[in-house]
Image 1 (spheres, rainbow, N blue to C red):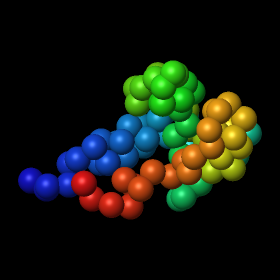
Image 2 (image 1 turned 90 degrees about the vertical axis):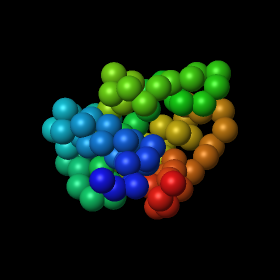
Image 3 (image 1 turned 180 degrees about the vertical axis):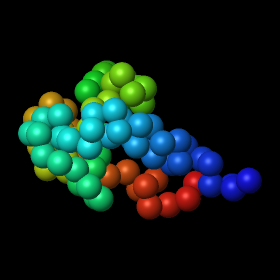
Length: 90
Ligand SMILES: [Zn+2]
């Protein structure tokens, strides 16, 4: 058993589930996804007052560009989309 089955690992599982479901194609621009470009975009943003969830129903495959662009347009406050938890073990 690994000590790494933390929230980060769970998110990675959900992300992969969404990417597989959507065929590793960006749902916003149709680009094929691989590596760093393969991201999961929250349809309803996570933070208040939106309070979107990490449920696959609230996620879609998106490339890095679309994800960044969308964050800029749809959310009142811009933030770095790539969460530090991707790079750190909690
Ligand atoms: Zn895209």
